[in-house]
Structures are given as C-alpha cells and as structure tokens.
Image (cartoon, rainbow, N blue to C red):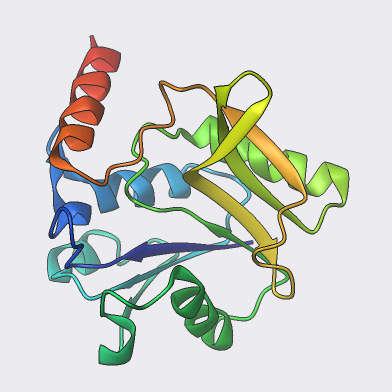
Length: 186
C-alpha cells in the first residue's frame, strides 16, 4: 500500500497550515510519523510545494519520497483528485491511502483499523467519517483508501469519534487540535 500525503503551502483560510507546529512537530511531520508506524504502508509519497528541506534530511533513511509539486498543481483551484492522479501516475500500486496533515488526531491505530477493514471486506474504497447527527455521517478528511480505479466511489465507512475528527481549516480548528493533543500527552 502506498501512502499519499498532500501538503499544499498556501491554503486560502490558513496559509502554510501543514507546517504549523504542535508539540514541536509540524502537522506534516505528525502525519508522516504515524504513517511510518503502520505495518501496512510500504511507501509514503509526500506531494508538496512547502519548504521541506529539513524534512527530506530527517526522513532520508525511511520509505518516504518527497515529490515537489509542479506549478500546475499548486493553485487554489487544484483538486485533491488532481494531486492523487499525479502521484498514481508516478508511483504504481494496487491500493493507496490518502492521509491529510490537517487531521492530526488520527492515530496509527485508526490507520491500521481502516486498512484491515478495507482488506477484510473486499470493498473498492473506504472513507473515514464522523457521525454528526444520529445515523448521518460526514467525511472527516482523516483517511481515504482506494484502488487506482475507484477513488471517489466510497463503499465502506470507518466511523471515528468527534474528538478524533478535527480537520484543521482555520486557526480556531488548529487551536482546538493543539489543546486536544496537549491533553493527550498529560
């Protein structure tokens, strides 16, 4: 399984959010680290336009590939699907797991459970969700698993708690995630 971590530099609402730090590590580093702890992910591809020279050095002996995005994949109108397609063209695998850095409360255990569910059900794809109303679920952005042909056609849902489903889009989201991660360390 190939892990894809997309990290765009200039988000509209919170610029450079993927490089913001919680407990001395950027959101991008948190995502790389929990990905490396999974026994199921063979390689991790970080696709970014962020300044990552220090991370390239830090992870040089790990199965982490850093792919500098082409200019055409850096704008506000570029979709995650465009970025994923670019990675899949260059790194061929049977299945992929997309892990966005903006979900820092997701754990290695969540990743492993998602992969086990995906592999155990024979589904085409899996998406992590949170229950926002009784029996109503919405995408929480933490985990997507898919094969090369089916990205976007979600067949199995992995339900995560509201506490783990913080998706950082604003400074308030970041502060909430920071507070929750600091509480976990106590």
